[in-house]
Length: 286
Image (tube, rainbow, N blue to C red):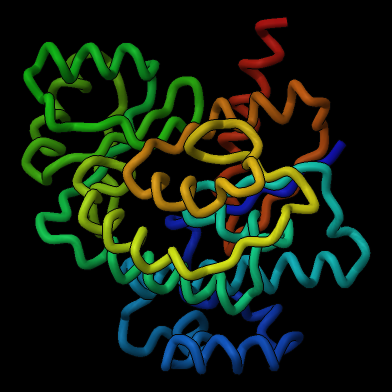
């Protein structure tokens, strides 16, 4: 069995999408009409240095991921038994499974990026390597850092936390004293945490009129680490904004269902190293 996995923020770089824009001129034009600017210029040249701003990053990655997957489908190798996407990448997984059109997906992603990028007191994030989620939670509690959330469970020993910029800075010595590696991330906010509640509320109102089709292929939800239920797509996409990305459990679920072949769709590969560590951990349990 085979699964496609789609990367989210952090996979962007100037020059991305050069190999696919020319293959889908009609979709590129439609994207430009929706966004009000040239997506190709943003991705290839980034003349105004906006590519790393959340409100631009999210639609840029969505478009490049979508066109890249469409090229795979056109070549005859695009069919999968499962789809999954990390955070923003979940929109590409749902698009691939037929949940909505390219255009509607882009409208949702553009609003999502705008709302998440516009949250006041946006905060920051840090990746902790070398400790489990339980160990990180306990360390945060012992340090009195109760306003820091566990945001992304990327591998069994890499977890991303979200919180205020001050708390993220304070936490560094806490975890380095425990022997962990600590990397403050260059992101535009405390994503997948309670700090995104204003964006979640506004997005819930925005997404309400959209129609979601029955999925033709299972998509594993970030929020539940189980396949989406038809009728639950809008709920999961809204809740995803403040809920942690349960990536380890999502990959483990697909592996248990028999997935042995994995294809990452991303401007640059960021999920494949996570995948190897998760599969290695799963294999060691057997």
